[in-house]
Image (tube, rainbow, N blue to C red; front, side, top):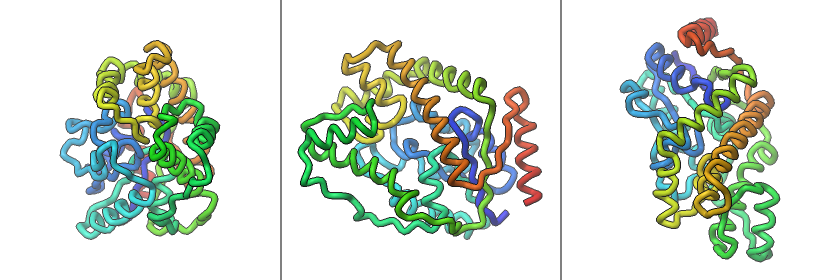
Length: 292
C-alpha cells in the first residue's frame, strides 16, 4: 500500500491496538501523532505504547525529547514529513497514530509554518501575561515570576490557535486515508474513567513526582492532562481524589474537543469499535482500506 494511513479518535478507543494490526497487515511503520508522547518519561499519563505492545513494529517520534526541550508543531511537521518520505522509500506504509489533530493536519496539509513565528510580549507585564494564560486555561499551573516560562506558555497556546485560522488550506499533500475509531458517549466516558484509575494504579503520581521533585515546570507537564492535575495535588491545592476526578473530567472534555476538530477539519471515516471482539473492528477497517 503506497498510501498513508491515519488512525485517530478520542482517547481510550483502541488506536494503538488497531495500528499494530494494520502495520503487520500492510507492511507499516508507525509515526506518533500525540503531542505528549514525543517526550521521554511521560509514559503512564500519555498512555504511551509499551515495548511489548509494539510487537517489533518500528515506531517513530516517541521519546525523542526531554521535557525541558522545546518541540512545536513546526518541528513535528518537519520530522513527520521526513519520516513519511523515508518509510515510503523503503516500500513501507506510514501509519500516523494519535489524537493530536493539529499535528496531523500540519504534517499532511499544505501549511507553511515558520520556526521563528514566536510573538514578542515585551509590552506586557508578567501579571498581564499570567492573566491571559488563566483566561485561556483556568487550570494552568505556572510560576508568575518566571518570565521565560510565561512567554513560552503563551506562545504555545497562540501556536495552537493560529494553525487552523491563519493558514487555512484544504490542500492535502499526500494520498491519505483517515480512519477514526469511535464508540457511544457512555462507553467512551466509562473507558476514560477506568483508564485514569489504571494510570493511578500503575504509578502516575510517582511518574509526575519524579519531575516535580526536580522543580521541572515545562509545557508538557503544566499543560498535559494527567500531569497538571497531579502537579496541583503535589502543590497542596487539592486532594489526590480531587485531582483524579479532575483528570477524568478534563479527559472527557478533551474527547469532546477532539471530535469537534476531527469532524470539521479532517475527512475521517468513522468505525464503531467492537470492544467485545476487536477482531471485528480490524476486519471492518481492513476491508475499507482494501476497497479504497
